[in-house]
Image: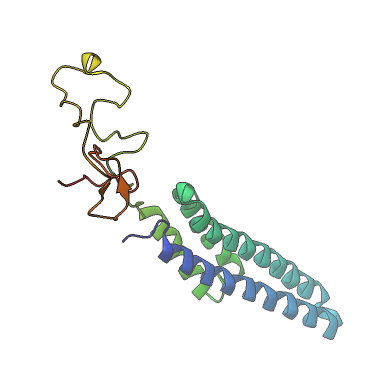
Length: 183
């Protein structure tokens, strides 16, 4: 059975986002060490720390996007494009040791090409009636060519051969699972 969300894109984007956040933390630490250890490189250390903060925020946005791939499958294409763009932007900070960039890029591409599984179609239910003539219609109002209504009286309940639930004696389809009732 196909997943109801793009699982490969979700997992790759999560792992890539973690690498990017880790690189941002590394850059923050390196910037702090450089600016505090060597006074002449204080400006460079501050720039590295600022780049680290930018990369951490970028990685957190990527992690949020990866979570959205799972929780909102209806917007997978949008988040796929956003993840690809963010992966390319992460190149400025080193791309999560380059591995994070690749994983998020592949995850974004997988999100773009993912197709949701088709919705199951079962007979019965409010939007897919099991037979053309609704139960509240009398035979005189049935459309031309419609099958006759099911026989009215049989003794005892009928049990579904698919799920085993009891149904009305004249049921054509199971009320629980929608499977056709066999004789």
